[in-house]
Image (cartoon, rainbow, N blue to C red; front, side):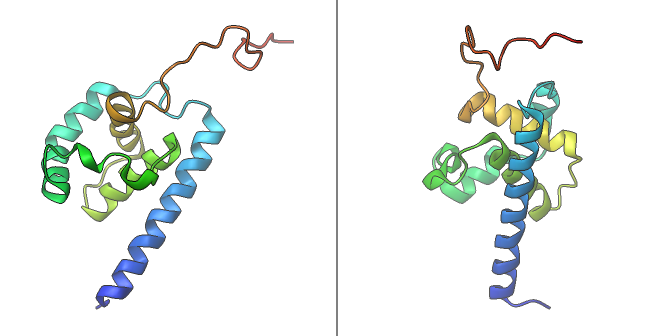
Amino acid sequence: MLGHRALAALSGLTLCACAVVGTAASAQTGLLFRGADLALGEKLMAEHQCTACHTRRVGGNGSAIYRPQGKVNTAGLLRGMVDYCSTELNMGLFPEEVTAVAAVLDRDHYRFETPKSTKGDPRAEPKARP
């Protein structure tokens, strides 16, 4: 059986790994949450009582857990944190479910992927096919 320090170290490593994977996924796909099933994310958050858990952890209405000390500052890190919660709490969420929950959190709290005006930005223009 692992001691408290070993578990804490393992949890920290898991979080770092999730953050790296989440950040890489964000860089590869452009908008990480594009096409995410928001209705599924909302359903899963209610089913797993995410708000109640966050309220128990931080008090108040639970919203203080969002952006704690600037630890979650990209869409990839947000997705990694949701994956971390799923793993730590043994929720067994599939990758598309993790993305759906993270997309709801992004929409409601973080807004990393809120569309900004891209008029005149050549990176946002559709590319012509050869």
